[in-house]
Image (cartoon, rainbow, N blue to C red; front, side, top):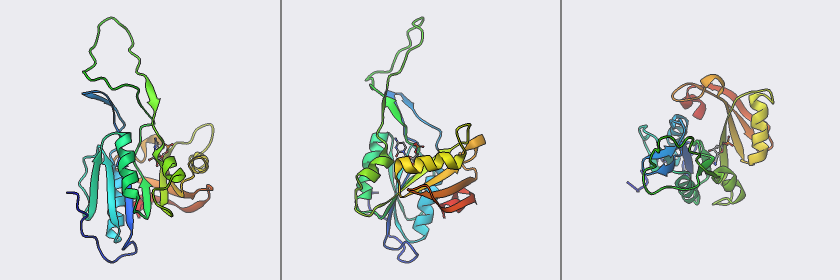
Length: 222
Ligand code: C5P
């Protein structure tokens, strides 16, 4: 339904409205195909659940998830990046905090064909032209739907020859300008599905404000 479930009246987040995005966006190519990613939504659902348990009113904008909706959480299902952006911005207009835990597609097919794309044998590779999607998180920082809205991002990082997970996270914190950025180490398949997660929380200047914390996605959501 579209009614807000009755929220808990006590807890440290009582009276607060928290918006969480979860899952992974899908960008249609034709009526039956899409470009997508493997995000399951577990971390975002855990964040929504914990916020509700602490008394917040919670709107969970969920892209292509199949998880049970936590008690006291209002689900807004979406599919594409454009839909996720609209739903997050609308819900954030009266929110205290928005947590962007969704895996958002950076690009989408330039054109959506009306009919199923046919295979033509012997024509070789068929390139797909892509155009850039908006960066929803950066947009929330640049143009906050509500003054004082706390904007929180997630950054899945792997260490490489250019730097450690934390160094990449710091660079992203400075680039994105979110009030808080939860950096998680996804090297070696960590942090996917219902596996344990490890997070370090940085502020907009890249300073560590919490963590590292490790545990189940429910543990780190707290
Ligand atoms: O740059 P990167 O995709 O690693 O940043 C991750 C953060 O940015 C996440 O919070 C994600 O939800 C958000 N994001 C976004 N819009 C995009 C890409 C990522 O809001 N187009």
